Figure 1: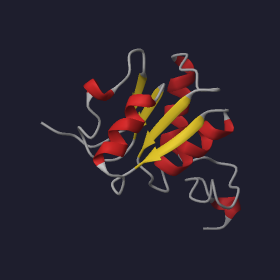
Figure 2: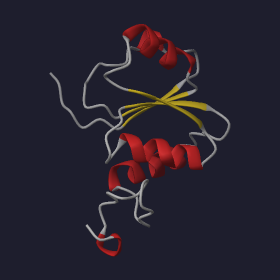
Figure 3: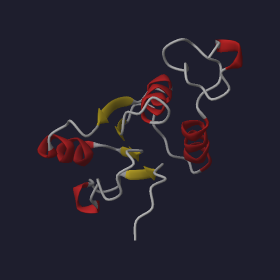
Length: 119
């Protein structure tokens, strides 16, 4: 997709598209509207897809957050420890229930960008 026609933001983090992907851009707007502060905070992004997780991490880094990315290849103990240290957790992994409430530190904020439904 040529950069000048990349309205989906496929090239956002690697080639400099001026349009971020719509899902992380919407999540970013919701975070701002709800006063979720990320500057200087440790933010864990759960998921690394090129359309949601990776661009979300990029946007957060650009806003001054210290970002860790957790994904399916991170062992469970490390994953749980990262989540437990985070000030903000952004889930966009496509795997409902991958983060448990009792892993979160007191006062941590969670932003669920997931679109996978479960019963």
